[in-house]
Length: 120
Image (cartoon, rainbow, N blue to C red; front, side):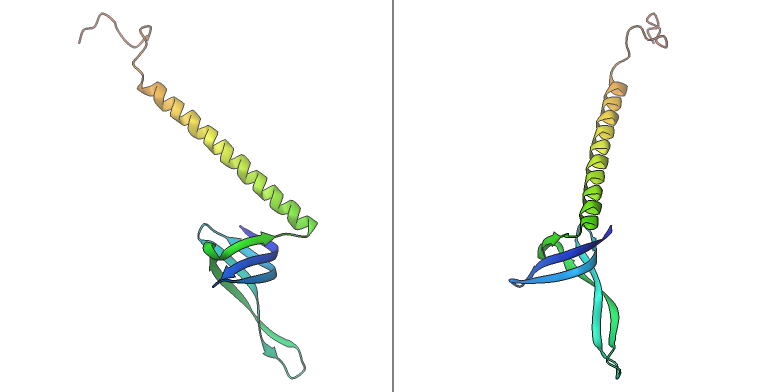
């Protein structure tokens, strides 16, 4: 999921790199950081820039910091909804396992589909 982060702290080759106010996409493998690369200036002194997307493997990520109230609330909401979804999924898995165990049990003696006098 893409989100805005106020500070991303990375540790690369023993040195800490701090990137501020960027959009990130976090995956299991790492972090994609979208920012702007300044190429230079025009004759009028305006910046010449281009968008840039950089991937950093998870091993380089030290921490991410959110400082704006709206971002903090958004991240908290996202984390809580993921926790609820994970809990709900685990409960469904437990329910599915219970159903499988019931299906494998021998038929009950009062099963109307089973004829107790049929020996074949």
